Length: 503
Image 1 (cartoon, rainbow, N blue to C red):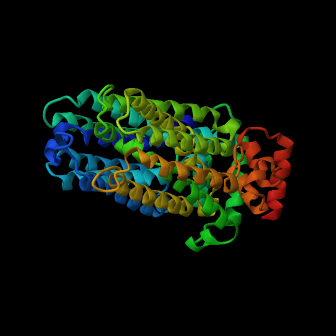
Image 2 (cartoon, helix red, strand yellow; image 1 turned 60 degrees about the vertical axis):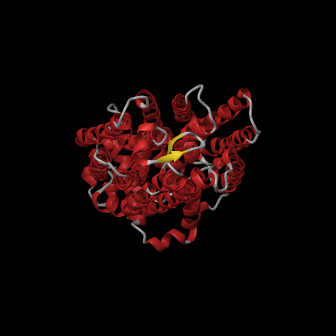
Image 3 (cartoon, rainbow, N blue to C red; image 1 turned 90 degrees about the vertical axis):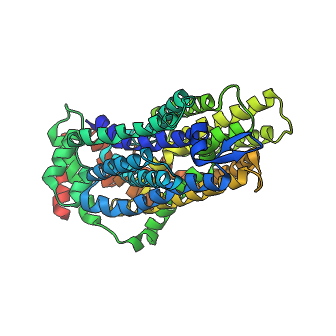
């Protein structure tokens, strides 16, 4: 049930990845640009002009921002699970608006609504997964959020590559309408997953929490072991309660807030928006026709998906810090190569191929590092009493950064504005180096530790660089052992006795 539940909730991110590839492709389709764009004499075809491209690519992130802002009260009042229904119904309405649109405004409003659901998704899913998963699997299961985004991106690229030559509106209408499938699946699967046990404990619904935790642990697990784990978690919940917004910036919580916000900002300032949203139209502007820009989109998204699959396997063995640090360096290298190759006047086909390859490898490096790990680190560094608010703040800042990057990229790329073209790689490559130093000095190693053990690490004040060697001694360590089924009966009895005495 644990794997099904975490895969199910993270599936809510599928449409975000799908839409990213979908719009990246259809904004280059003649049937779409003939309806919504203007004629460009340089390219000798209709295109979406830079100002309109900026609006259509960036304004949906305003909806995503609203989604992140309302996610915290939704999670606190209705729970993590109930938020999935909101995501599903919002997505249905947004997709319906897109499919029935004959003007830019209605189409964009539809995307804004779909992104509102995405904003809720990127807050709810990491919170649920971190609270439901045992320490030894939290990284791998948390990475499934990016995995579903990757699956959506691949299918979006494949489908638009298949429909782009169709005459008329069907070329973009068919792939747009397929967005109805995901919310229907969310509604169908909703009754079969449990609520987050830690959320239920926070609401003093202990019997429901126990039932949920039993369902989330292996079927052959001794019920007494699950009860013991729940008692330990309950003890920490009673000790801490819930905190107000101002507590995010006090004491050890400030450090945790900086890390959560920092990793989510780092996810965006690497320039991934260029690959995700503008690669097809960029290849078209460069005169690249063989292979087709749409086929390149399929190759690029598939490469990123393979990277996401690989990182989900290694994240709990290699750890968060190493992957983030190596990822930052590799991202910077490929971006600098991309910029250098694309800066050559009248490049040969070989030089164009170097630029394309560097762009693909950038996507792979990003997909193996900052793309999935940002969500994992954000959720696990947050304390239980402030998790909803920490995730809310971090995802909101991330969305604002995405909006700024999406809004400015058309002006950075195209004439008559900055006209940097591939030289944007120098900008984002430099920012990727900044993410390396942030990860080195701020991000601790939290692999194979329970959320309560993470609390102990931050309370100890140990530096990020030494966190991997920290040996926990409190309740957090016992919860880690309980989650990993390493507890002996005598120790459980002793701990239960000590817990009762303290209470």
